[in-house]
Length: 156
Length: 156
DNA sequence: CCAATCTCATTAGCAGGCTATCGATCAATG
DNA sequence: CATTGATCGATAGCCTGCTAATGAGATTGG
Image (tube, rainbow over all chains, first blue to last red; front, side, top):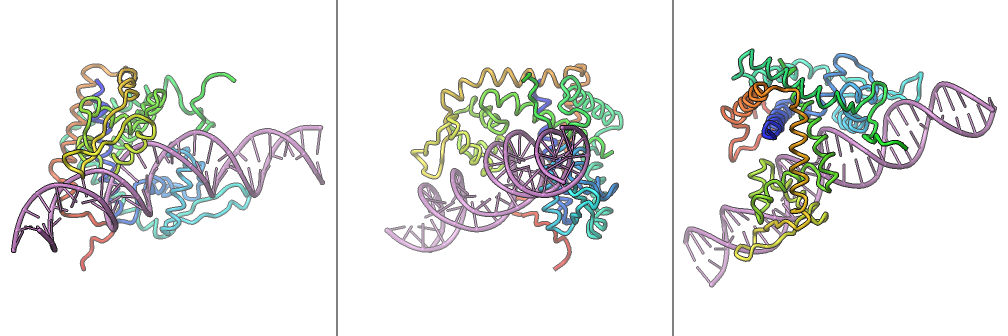
């Protein structure tokens, strides 16, 4: 029963390590890749917006952005209209990494699921989705609009 | 195609967070739980042995053991026969946590897979196993002796 | 027997995740 | 207009994982 959870953890760890190794060859770490995947589509988001899309906390994005800035992958610009906001903009270096990284990602996914039939992939997909629904549905950890609220549900 | 990987990551993250939260109620964090699960069965292992069984590196076990020692969950004893070895022994406090934590783990696994049929669980299990086999078998991520040096695949 | 080597645990330092807190800025209200 | 409250990024500090380098102790070869 709990065996499935162990397999899930193990599989995810292997995939994460493989992804990190592949992307590191292009100067991008696994956590940075998540930010890139969003910014490649929509440049100039704020840390908070990114955190919401990536389902991580704002400090995680802030720290990752700092490392990416040091690596020359993005720059911070204060929003002229709202001084609280910081907008993250990709550099040409980050844009240049898009193709090879997307390709590496595709190859990894293909390799990992190479021994699965299409039906097995569909089954896997739906089973994972059910688990996610079960974990997020009955006890929603996030309210739309609210972000990273604590899990405290007891009254005041 | 890469969607399955995303779902896998997301599911694992949700489960990990839920497990950590549940175990924290018993004074045990998620990483410490892994060590406990092994030591409950076989007390007095060394950090290296534990690392091998848990499929993590030795420093990870050493650091976790240090935190667990501070939390009063285990004690370090030098092996009398071989001064290089350190044996990790559980305290009564760690033994007392076995029941409630096993129970919490069981409940979590049950909850997470509650909406799956037995057949779906079997499919999920085998699909994950295939991915793990694929990631560990055909292309061993590390050659013994080789050190995946990153960011430089080009010639001399 | 002693020096070189090997084996282990530890330490240092990084990445990536979290919560809690701070400081700055904006918005609303008196 | 000034104060107050909300919002947002940044910082501090923790846990968990990794690699590389250190150091103490065992083995082995000469």
